[in-house]
Length: 287
Ligand SMILES: [Zn+2]
Image (cartoon, rainbow, N blue to C red; front, side, top):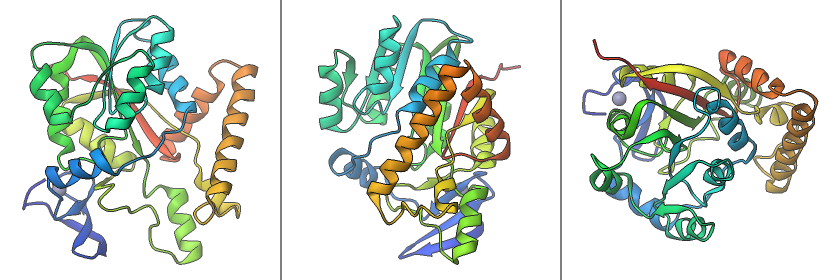
């Protein structure tokens, strides 16, 4: 992110533009907010709960390469993802900026540090390393995701894995819905989300920051409900009901056949379809 950032203008909101940046390889707001502006926003205002089904999916997937070890969850919120690792004997650490969420995670018996990402880098650099680092719903919020991805590698043990998850925006289903209803993108939230990733953008960012993708999958494309006429954008209750339907469907499929849900979401990843994108990656070997 710099003054050299330039690319196709997607939309304008107040004093900000959303561009498909040629230099960065993904869509972001320009001019960017400062880190101070954003940290203040998250520390005090922000509150959102992440869907639960994907927590199991990530845990089961990572076991294919790493059956047990240490895990760091950056932005662990109330610790629900870590708790799944903890139940299976992993040693868990969390970083969470939001005071209330960090306190809740601590009451679950987890090692959680109430720190910003920059404070975390300062405090733990050279001091600790983990086998797996989960970075869920972080990259869309921070002004310099490339810097973050370059730095975080130093906190992984040799052969360790990073799991990156972001909302999948400007997906084919979302665009089809917008076109049908002549709408502008309803998922643009400022200053909450400052970067917007689709499959191409996230893969560009991972590659340019020295990461090799091992595996990718998505989560259920919630936009399917919109396309089928259930407008959860205007009705929170409907949104929660739609989400419960997905959880129930996944429960039945999981009981029927292990790996079926995983294979479905891996296939959808290749089409760029799904509510979120998840990439498992390792550091590229230096030549
Ligand atoms: Zn840029």
